[in-house]
Length: 428
Image (cartoon, rainbow, N blue to C red; front, top):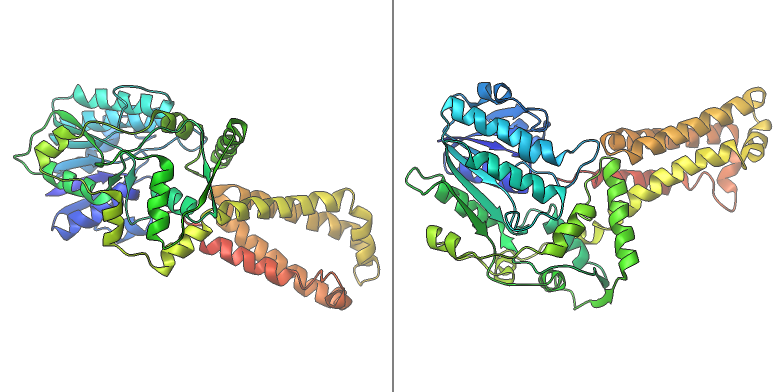
């Protein structure tokens, strides 16, 4: 078959793409930006679902396609992500295009519980997309999975690993129960519904066999990683709300933390459902979390990732703060000290101009690092700026290498930290 996967760079989409290619299918890889995975795909299309709002935007790419799998999804609205456009408007245009071209088999990923309750724009737009598909004359299947976990670390899979690495486990208030489902069970389900003889025009819940709390899920990961049980610390409501608001703020800068306001609303609802229809149709016996983890023993890379998970946001808060505040201080309370530092050097006549230039450069670097789309450029800019300061300081004020507070020596760990940030920048 020739199968088009929309959202092919995500957790589910990338795994499905690899599996279907291994099965001998011809996969059309669709994502909203070029990725390593898309560059390796035989057929790769860059198309933003939030902007492809007309059937004509999809029709040229659908020619010759036998089936479409829509895995596209975003958690929350911000300057770059629009839930209604991705889950409803863009999806509806895709479904209408499939109907026009004659691609009848459409497998659409929704979310568990959206047909029962819509506490956020995420679930409301997901339901709108489901309804749009049901209205089309297609052999459609709507899959509504619970929280999907797998060996790839992204979204919830990454969050649970990070929480498992903490010596104290923060327990968020008002969190519902979860029937986490394994990524491999999702893949088996899609393969079943891609068969020409499989049933269609139905929506099924997909979930694991266990009803767990978030703390219990984390405990499974902690045991898998070989660490002792962590002490639980119940977070007060105000602290939890502050964390969700910080996640929202990061979202405004283009980052996609799993802890945001929509996640708060969805987690409170939980993710549990009746899986009898799914198991009866497919014959799949969903794996328990402990059994699934036991199949793949952890590696040192897993422990590194878990330990770095919450270090990463700390780094990307500290670095912009460091650079921006350095620039502000240089222009305000530290102005005189900066000018005096250069007053005894060869550039004394332009000392004030040099301080201003350095301050503005620092602020620019910090701003670039803070914005997700420019963070890589900002990190390289910070390394180049630090290197320049080191060389210039050595030429103009070599005595600073021998200062007790090490103003030039500190450049070395600063550069090293930026290299670490570059190494852990990618999220997929």
